[in-house]
Image (cartoon, rainbow, N blue to C red; front, side):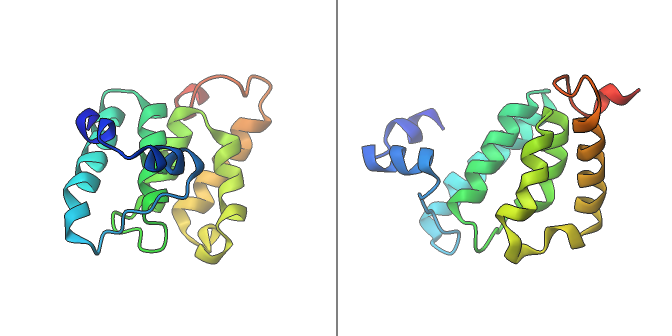
Length: 132
């Protein structure tokens, strides 16, 4: 992944940080790179690096937001809760109104949990594991 990132064109780097870069899944040449990013996201989450996994998930979703071939919208709520990014999760449905995210049961539960965690006095703490 580092070699791929180092080989990016300078415009690709700036577009990735702005969220306007696109690597479509339907182009077969992009699939190995997208799969490698997806595996890295899962690995980071397994190792407890939830914020890194969330950022990789955001990047992957931004690269192909219309297709979402890896169903990242179903993974992002769990990663956001584990990373302690409650406010970002609460803002996500309004940022993507065409997807109808609050209609999915997982999102409804995640949004309720994010609201509870962000309303708690120590909301700046960790993720959903701190509810105990």
